[in-house]
Length: 157
Image 1 (cartoon, rainbow, N blue to C red):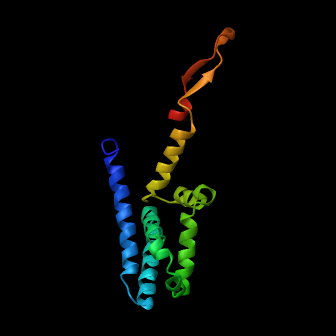
Image 2: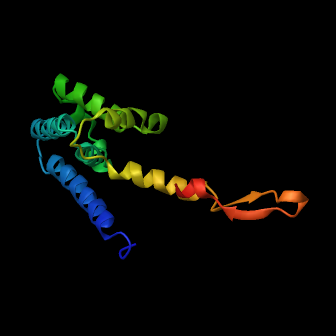
Image 3: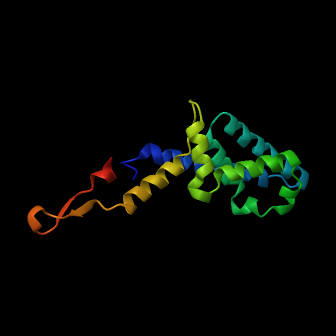
């Protein structure tokens, strides 16, 4: 992997480090009010990323907020301002897995360049294309001969 896709691995590593940093920003605050303020600020940053069409930033920030150590902080989420709760709900809907990330795909398609897509969706799609489609297809030979194995060109288009 390192030799074939070093830039992809670097981007994935950066996203993971950023998600860990997001969690640390929230968890570093000892008081509930300060934690809720930090959490709300990160929701604002994610919303601004969406306004700038930086989908990768949105997904990365929400990944950090969904890490188990942050996700379990029910009181912190309960202390969020109503506008932060509404924004968080909207952003969570955007990154949702429902219907194969339908909302994200629609927003990405409608986005005017420049935009920063979320690489994880592309990597998942490529994995399913590779694993979900055979490399060869069996085709009946002319004149009733034995079937032949041919390259599945539709997989490689």
